[in-house]
Length: 270
Image (tube, rainbow, N blue to C red; front, side, top):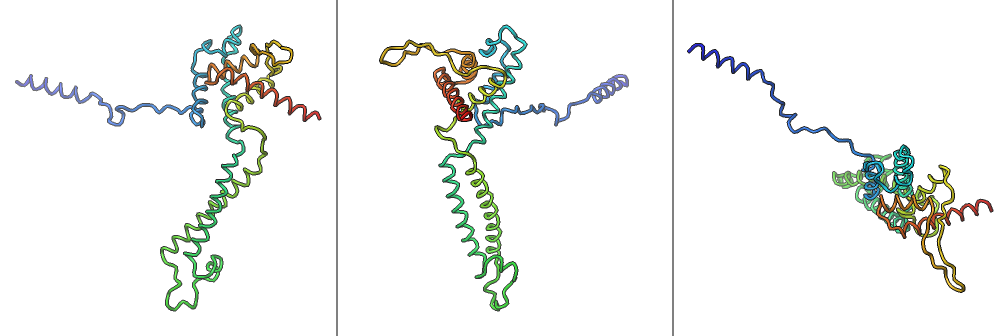
């Protein structure tokens, strides 16, 4: 009997030495780092960047443009990712629309009216500066001009509204100083092509103009059979295969970017 008790005690001691996981560590997972593109305002930018970074090398249409030199594929993809970030920054800093400025100006006028109304609640017939300098009035025997809790709260709200009004006024002023561009507002496709064109030309790329295959007809418009070119091929491979744009949209946008740059260049020379 004594021997059996010893065995039980040994078994208990052995079980007590077993380390149990802490309750806090059960189910705990390492916190994954949020990717930098997750903060971009456009979801399609996020999808395209994720595809450029995660797709296996040689699996995208942009990789096939340099299939003879696979070592250049990672740098090319990094450059294209940078183009998405640059285009998003261009759209972020562009000038506000007339509708946005009009709504902001209307809000500014309403804030000015709110300040006037709140001041009439919290003053005793004097303006705010006089109340601060002179203090409590000496002719208030009945206590009719004392600052109540409600009036003090409105006074504080007035100060907050005044601070926000000045901030809004400064934002409107800074926005109206930005140069306004004529023509259609540049949207996502145009900003992406502008950024891609700048990168292409800065890297030694030649003309952006696509080669147009067409048959000319006497007294009538030419029949266009297609467009080609190195820059156009890159734009289509990126914006149609990685992104969601149509080939016709990209071709038209490439032509617009090329013509706009020619016009700018001509003006600078003149």
